Amino acid sequence: AAAAPPAAATAAAATPPTGPKEWTGLASMPQATQKSLVDVLNSLREKNQNEMTVVFVGKQGMGKSSTLNSVLNERVAVSAPFQPESLRPLLAGRAAAGFTLNLLDTPGLLEGDAVSARGVASVKLAMKDREVHAIVYMDRLDEWRVTNGDRAAFRALADAFGAEMWERTVIGLSHGQLSPPNGMPYDDFVAKRAAALRAAIRDELRSPGLALPHCVVENGSRCATNGGGEKVLPDADRTVWLTKFVSTLVDVAKSHEKPMAYDPEKVYSSAADPNKKRRWLVPILLALQTAVLRPLVVGTIRRDVKGGKAGRV
Image 1 (cartoon, rainbow, N blue to C red):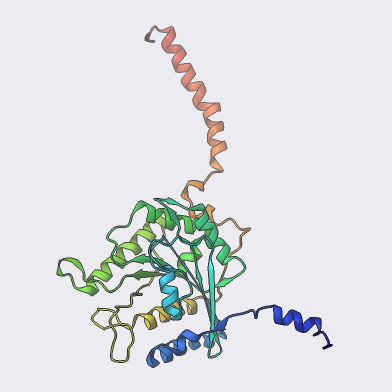
Image 2 (cartoon, rainbow, N blue to C red; image 1 turned 120 degrees about the vertical axis):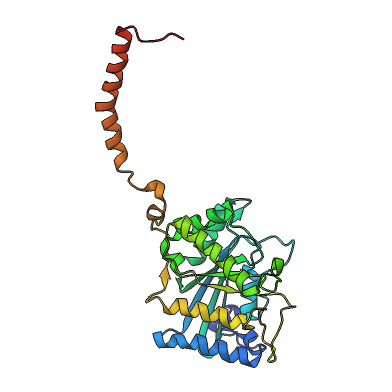
């Protein structure tokens, strides 16, 4: 009888390899896109960095999963109409040319117009024990308004992760292949949509200094292409959106000395929530009311009653 294989060999065969997979989708991109992505990611080596982690957040149906799939050129995250959204974060790590790109997809932040506790918890789970270099807040270019639900999502993220998160955030605007209404030039429409969303975030968080760069993306198969087969936007420059998107994420990663490390034991919301400021004054004000204001009011009422000024009901 053949000798049984060593236990170590059996365990190795039964255990799937860990770590990022080879970025096979990169090889099927246009040559110019391949070179641009490898060059821009490798520019992080100037900071002795050979890995970048990006987290996608936002409401349901804004293009988080589709954009992740487009960046990797692989169908990793489920993204289809009428499909229920996963309640768990999804990590896709891909390695190429000695660099690792980690993309984290998360569930939507809202249930109706209210913040989803499960959605926020899922983002926390995604960021736990990870060093995050950039965050993408996804929305749609073809949305016209910033709603109360949007503002609630901005606040929920600030309360959960602090202001540092928004300092590392890029606004991603999906559905970029559109024709603006009323003949408005495409570039003007994009600028106004991005400015409105940026202003709402700054206003809600009371942080006028947030940079919040934006990128337009188009995940549809009918996206226009240039002569080299690269997907381009209908703007004046015919921007290759994928290269621009990843380049913006790398710029955000470079602009910070260290990556963001989320600590689940830390309370981030006290500085962000104005309702929690100066709570130490509450007992002092109560004592002042009891010791000073109450005797004055009671004394005035008694004098009025004694002088016959009190009314009857």
